[in-house]
Amino acid sequence: MKLYSTNNKNNQVSFKEAVIKGIADDGGLYVPVSLPQMQEAFFERIEILDLQDIAFAVSRRVLKEEIPDYELFKIIRSAFTFTAPLKPLDNDKNILELFHGPTLAFKDFGARFLAETLSFFNQDEDQKLVILVATSGDTGSAVANGFYNVSGIDVVLLYPSGKVSKIQEQQLTTLGGNVTALEVLGSFDDCQRMVKEAFNDKELKSKVKLTSANSINFARLFPQSFYYHYAYSQLERRDMPVIFSVPSGNLGNLTAGLIARKMGLPVKKFIAALNSNDVFANYLKSGTFQPKTSVRTISNAMDVGNPSNFYRIYSMFDGNLNSMKEVIFSQSFSDNQTRQAIGEIYNKYGYLADPHGAVGYLALKEYLKEYPGYYNSIILETAHPAKFKDIVEENSGTSVEIPESLVKCLEKKKKSIVVSNNLDALKSILL
Image (tube, rainbow, N blue to C red; front, side):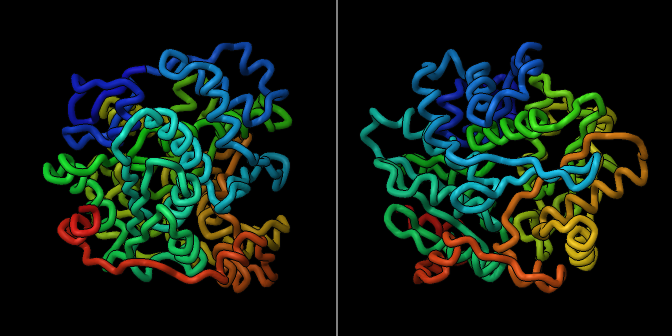
């Protein structure tokens, strides 16, 4: 498999090199030169396959020349010890629950696959690998859990101080071991900028072996495509157009869906559901990509003002805005609308959605209003509602049961290092 940099299509590397580097030498993100199509037989029998079967089939189609089958099978078996059930709301609306992993968020899929893959590629190396991660909430805890005490690998997490939920912060800061949490005095965009600057710093690159576990890293992003196939496999009927409503921040989840579509998954439309951070929706309307300072919301994992994966999506469509709009619809919603949606989903369907899933629900409603028809609609529910307990309870009028893993996490002592939002502060830690 060959991947190119979004900054230079002639800058091509292998999958292994892309995974270990995380980001291209020229600062671009890696995108596959081409993606193979899944065979018709795969979709004809997809309903009898479980998540591990699908993950192995899709990843083998892409990686068979880079990872031996038996090693890839071990990676899949170790990474995906949980599932992603599709729950019907009504005859044509479904919720895909992506919070059944160890940290109760969809990031577990990508983080655990990446951890296993990096461990495989790094097993014969002498130099320690440092995983550098910017997180607006769930990415950090998923990466920390996935790489916890993995030999030869250290994890450094950057998160914006005061801008993640209490539960998310506990998950980020209580593991210890080979995991260091940096509490950055700034926004998520500051954290993401610091990570990018670190990868481009000559002194750091000469002294520290760095890679990323954000959706910057293709191996964090690619495995998220597996659950789009798995959602399709669980539909009772597949004779109606399929649309996915994807809560979106850094646009990694959306990009993973587009990868699944390029490999043959029959998806009519992706809905990029945004909170008040509406940069991508504005781009689709105006044709101008204009990053801006992120706004804090109750759906904090989507609080991104300069989404990195925009450049991947732009490249996948060869910069053709009209082609992009044929496949992607986007709309943004306020916190007040999100709060109302949490109550509406519970009162109408008896389902407790977290704020991110509620934004996905709102965007789906808006799309169906503008483009009425008969669809198989799937909303991605990206985090367990208990991670946003106060907000969900206040707006649904019912209590949220906290899973045992979160109860234990809340009892642990927070350990973080407060740092300024500049590269020098990060370098002082890494060096």
